[in-house]
Amino acid sequence: MNRYDLTRAGALVALLAALVCGFAPMTASAAEEKAETMYRLYNEFTGEHFYTSSAAERSSLMRSGWDDEGVAWIAPTSSKTPVYRLYNPHVSGGDHHYTTSRSERDALVREGWRSEGIGWYSDDSRGTALYRLYNPNAITGTHHYTSSASERDALVKEGWKNEEIAWYGLVGTNIMGSSLADAELLASYYRATVGEKTYPSNVYKEKGAATIDDFCRILVEEAEAEGVRAEVVFTQAMKETGWLRFGGAVKVEWCNFAGLGAVNSNPVEGANHFKDVRTGLRAQVQHLKAYASTEPLNNPCVDLRFDLVSRGCAPNLEDLNGRWAVPGNGYGESLAAMIDAILEMK
Image (cartoon, rainbow, N blue to C red; front, side, top):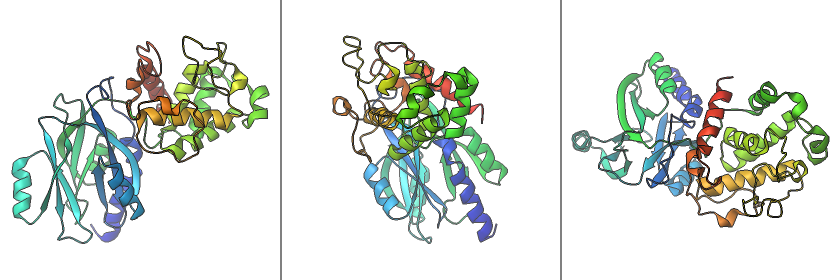
């Protein structure tokens, strides 16, 4: 494989990143099991993908020119199965390798690799498989790890060797990460589900979103600004508002798309009002980020309840059960199912 082919193979992995930042079949246990978010980054100059649970390390690499590919999986904060991280300083640009095998770790150290200790832990209950692939034609970025069977299969077709399962992540549908659905797909799903005429254009044309296309465009912009998956924001807004028909305590003109402040004890007087569609969606996105992440906001805070949340307590949709919705049985799972239906339209 020449340099062009190597770059092409690396680019293919990068293009398939969105598949990783989606989800696997999941349950509601991640937050309860003390989880940490695993980030994935890509260096286009070396072809290496890098994985870390450190937000500081992620930010440092991004400043150095690495591409952020979002959330790769959710790992337990401890288990009986550590994943060891090693570094090879003897190739141009350096290279990292990850393994649960002590014998493989020790063999690489004897070959001149540097042990960087434990990178993270594998889930002993074997929730979400992380596949390991090998590119025999690469010098750096020789191994790749993914929770996506589709990405694994695509790389195998490109000549990568499937080395089976490397370790396991916790189960959960990520709230943070790269979006798998764009504004056009979300608008199409809305039309296919409830029809164009359902959209309250008579109200929202005065609030910055005359059409469902405008609404979805703004939603995607606000979601991407904070690193929240757009399809998560969309499905939650549709569930909470009855596909923007409202009809409950929260009124359509309030631009409150997630029932913010409409707690069971005081749903009408407590509900938040927002001046326009963008502000309402921004507040929803920021509230989701409060639950799913400990990273700071990128836009000025408009979520009036942001500081009431224990930051990072719900990295997955299923973890919102009993938190965002009370009692909330099946709340996150219902959103995940709707996301599956949307992505089937792609």
